[in-house]
Length: 314
Ligand code: TUI
Image (cartoon, rainbow, N blue to C red; front, side, top):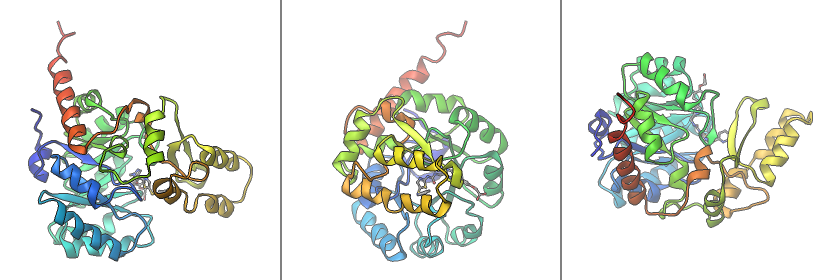
């Protein structure tokens, strides 16, 4: 059995968070992950406060275990959904795509554990000073909005820089990845792509099929020109976008090209116009399983790998 301080800190059985995937991570998936012993997370995405409140309450009907909410800081509703988290006193808030400092006082005041997702040592230090309970150090292997540094390089540097637990994300698809992250100084992991194929994940069937069909070179990072690199599966949409990025198309037009593409992928499974966010681990994901089985299988494997870790040591 694998236990780390992250388990006690968040009241969970296994030190694993589910990533807050926009248009995908709803109350049902979050409750399934929490019931499976991890920390399920509802994505507040670009939706308004009413959607989030309803999802939090729905999750409370489905689990008595702790769960969290992910706030995408670029959302036009970030301030409003931040306030909902405080009012509803959710156990954990994770944040992404920006600096959460301005919201941290209201969350800490409400007794919420704040866990920013960061992609640099500087941001990790800043949020640790502001009262974060832990950080998710997310490497560029991840799906969605990404930084530049790999998990292998980011995690040990963040672990050296802060005194709070580090949860590794990006490039973790199985127990070997979990074991490797522990070797780098992480005390927990966050997985998104693997939970895309959880039985309880509400994403369109086409999305799951694409993840299961992906290989090691199936993803591409686009959006660097606008300052917001995003990793997704190579599809007609991402190829069109990548081409447009180098075509001299004006920024506003390029931005327009992406509007609604996440929703089209997640809800409609639109293979032509959807943007199927996924991490590089998509190539190692083989089957759909209940979330609880995913978690159990990953940690059984991690335990075996860690037990064998001394075999080359003389
Ligand atoms: O946030 C994510 N992943 C996401 S957000 C998202 S929704 C979206 N849709 C369209 C365009 C862009 C995003 C899909 N996937 N991961 C966590 C993460 N946070 N990765 C990188 C960062 C990050 C980046 C900059 C954290 C802090 C940061 O600070 C910069 C600053 O100084 O504000």
